[in-house]
Image 1 (cartoon, rainbow, N blue to C red):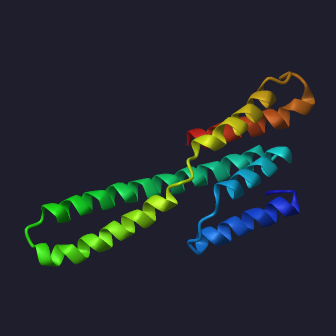
Image 2 (tube, rainbow, N blue to C red; image 1 turned 180 degrees about the vertical axis):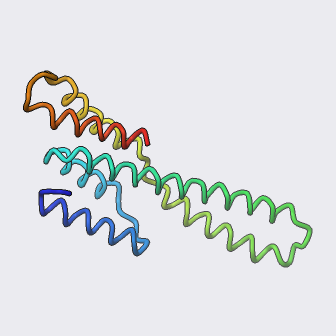
Image 3 (tube, one colour; image 1 turned 30 degrees about the vertical axis):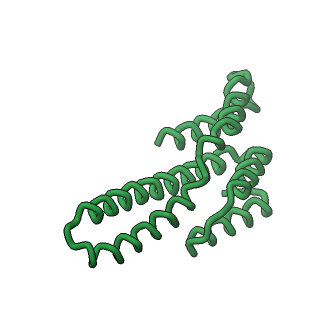
Length: 144
């Protein structure tokens, strides 16, 4: 899928970290996405962005669910039992909120600029057709 061995290795490290529930920094995602854009791998960059968005949504939803559970515990009558559970829920919420840190919004602009450049090329020029198709696929990845 990815022609550049360095990018392929970086992506495999990223997925290895995700598989083992390790967090990658904003800078790691930005570096890999930028490298993909420089190498003309707009489809791969858009797929990485989609994965980033899905992870962000899952963590955000988990945080909302934990907030709801904390509220239920605070409304509960059994104070002794709920104190320990409340402490556990608050700890899990703090951990989840610390993982929500990477906002996908900051990754959109460079990719959309790259897509815009490809889409503004002469549509009748043969050499621009593969770039145009890749940009359309990247837009489809964003939409889906």
